[in-house]
Amino acid sequence: MNGRVRTLILSDALNVRPRIGGRRGDILKIKLSQIKSTEPKREHGDISDLKQSIADIGLINPLTIDEAGRLLAGRRRFQAVKELGWAEVECYVLPVNGDQLKAFRIAINENLKRKNLTDPEVATAIKEYDEMKRKLEGSKSAGNPNLLQCGKLEGWTQDRTAQELGISQQAVTKAIKIATAIEEYPDLANYQKGTPVLKEYAKRERQKLIVQPMVESDIRIILGDMKGELARLADNSVSLILTDPPYAAEFLEAWQDLAKISARLLKPSGFLVAYSGQLYLDKVMKYLGEHLTYYWLAGVWLKGAPSHRFERHIQNAFKPILIYQKPPLAKQVEWMVDLLESPVADKGYHSYGQSEAPFVILLQSFSSPGELVIDPFCGGGVVPYVCQKLGRKCLAIDSDKDAYQTTLLRLQNDQAQI
Ligand SMILES: C[S@@+](CC[C@H](N)C(=O)[O-])C[C@H]1O[C@@H](n2cnc3c(N)ncnc32)[C@H](O)[C@@H]1O
Image: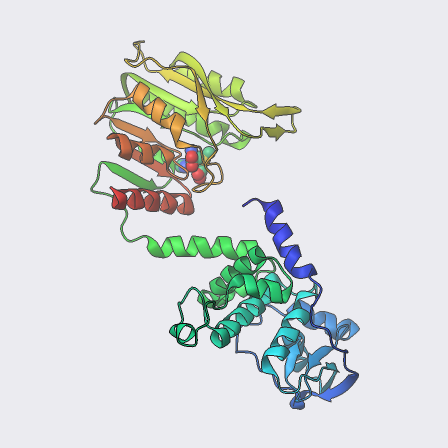
């Protein structure tokens, strides 16, 4: 999902107008000791800014309570004024005549229309509402037997929660994911926005799943700096270096290292095949040419919308593939067309992830089954993944822990399916 869609879903949740009608009650000063917070105990997140603002300019939005003093909306504000030592606080009083569910829905709608709430708070309220309705009405997904007994065909669904709260079903689904993540890791409630909560949750879950690094295998993944790790390998021991290094200016030095290391590690007539950006292509080719022989310039056509390169007013639709060889020059066995197609960039494993299809062709063209292939900048693991599929030995390195773990998981999941 891209950032824009996410924003729309969240604003959908935050801008919603409450459907519950009813007259707003009077604003009264109520003693803090008379207010009961009926919500389940949970983290309030960091409320120091809120406390400071209330201490400086007072409470802009009164709390909302029902006729029995139960807090319907304003959990964080209530906590803040308690911590500030206030004796009483302004509250709207909304009579709900003891109807707990109605009270709860009022609380959520109060929360939804307030923009100063964090996404995690809104999400938690939505999830609680959905759960409460499921308990009362039965859950469709759980196949509640009571429903069958009493002849009802349908239980509660997220769609119905969405309808009752007047928000989209995607907003409910996303809210439930955010709230579930916070239940698992309460410190995630400190984020203001929902997307970082989900990203951090995914990262922690990945870390939990990793059992063993793969060491005793034809495919080996290493967490570390490529220069240090490759220094351990013997001269003339590698058939192909197939890689996609970072393209930014600060990585030009890494290209120099790559050129030098490749010249040492590659077997005679072994290939270095590397994706590159265009901005510093002149320098990159110069560095590679200092240590290896230029062989060919191929390209990968990035299908789909081109990315905008604002530095040059270019809509970029292809990537150069640099092919260099350690002398002596020798033709590769398989013929290859020099414009490859990348159906969709695969960002599921890495934010700079590349699709598998061109790597399959490059691997088949420049290596044979059983040979050793190296990817010193493996990212989300596309090279070791295709090596595993096509029976090449592979050593892949990344200095980023998340990329390393993602690659391990990708390969383990693939092995599990074989
Ligand atoms: C462009 S990404 C590779 C993306 C990969 N082709 C994919 O499809 O997922 C480059 C990777 O190089 C890694 N990297 C950068 N400097 C490195 C270094 N000195 N040693 C090892 N890895 C490095 C980064 O962490 C990043 O994951």
